[in-house]
Length: 292
View 1 (tube, rainbow, N blue to C red):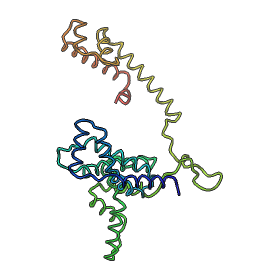
View 2: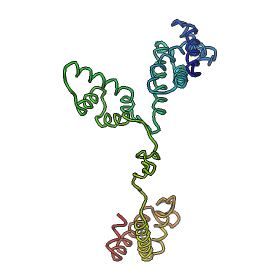
View 3: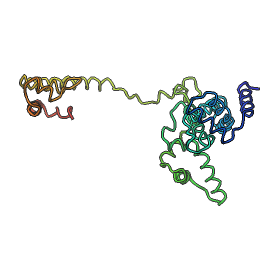
View 4: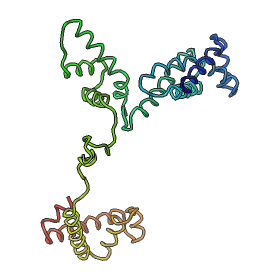
């Protein structure tokens, strides 16, 4: 017998031996943990409902995750439920814990189902766990009526039933249709076959693009230096402090240093920009292509 299967059965047997809590005892334990942080009360509460966690974990075995891992995640969800449970709300702990247990297991399944991140939104998560079931239901109903649904019709029906965008249905259907494979795997069984990674487009800049970009940046720098030289010393100082520092200075701080009002500093800055604009226009019309 596989070791993990033996562990599964052992944990299940131990969980089945745990005490069954009536509503009054459950409430007392919940208060003891919430108000006094009584760890023995927490242990009794969690142990009593571990059978519920194991039962829910078993419903997710079809996603390929080891049962031991699913039980551990279910246990974590149960612990979170115990931490956040408010006995004053008048709800049984088991009813409250179901949501946390399911959420913990679902998060684990989706993290480990594929190397590619799947189901990052609530609609995609809903589809991940319900698409196949809803699809099978519609196919059975269509077969009973003697109808033949095409793929687009079926996806539209799923979209309306689950309440998610059609594009999410199409995306998730594609993700669930196949498993991951390495980009270094060969496209064919031949020894000299290309790897899949060889078919990816290189997004890095080519040599001619790099040279052209370097030339443009150098030319633009020369234009800007020439435009700055046409400013007064005070105008250059204000522009450097306002636009070229990692942490630009405020109009108020510059006004205090130069003995001017904030409004006057703003006016000098605006005038300096106008001077630079006229200078750049005289250099070349192409400058606005680089500054746009």
